[in-house]
Image (tube, rainbow, N blue to C red):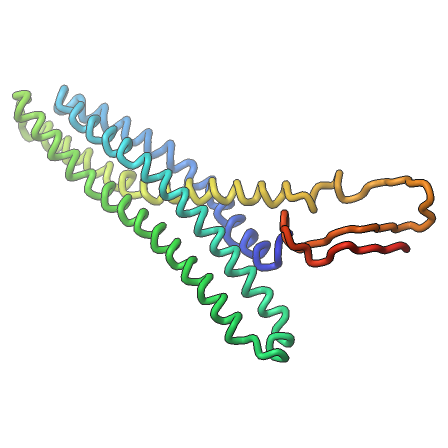
Length: 250
């Protein structure tokens, strides 16, 4: 069962990330297209030395693949921590009169602060991964130019003003698409997590129309509503129900 805080988190965070995903989705293929065009231009400028740039690009992509999976795991943990913190905060706000009556403010303050600490740890992990990706991709232009010029030196590729200026101009044009690659990776991971969370919400048992209403005919039952030895709980798959062994006949 989802609380009001969790549903608010779905609406304000997950739905927003799904909404902005189409724009960044087009950035993925346009960035790849720009890199391919740049490699073609570089091949005409420095010929076989272009493969050094291609090797650097492939190595950077392979190196960031496991890191992207790690960022996905941290992002999932962050959303779970945010749900727990918002759920607890919502319960406190709804039952504020009861907390004041029994003087439970300090206890629930400690609980929410502990949940907030867990959320902050997840935020730090996600931001560190983003910072690392940003550093790698921003330094990729230097690595590309160094690898290409080194290949030209060892392969005896002649360098003159025509191909050198073409090479430098092409690298400058590629800096913008390369610099947004970390943002694209982050948005894609966030959208993937948001899609999974929204799907889980929409597939929740309490939202399934097939389970919302059932017809039951039993012998010896005269009332419209008949409940016998039933257990009720606000949480899913709990071992301690809120109401146990309930009987009701209407």
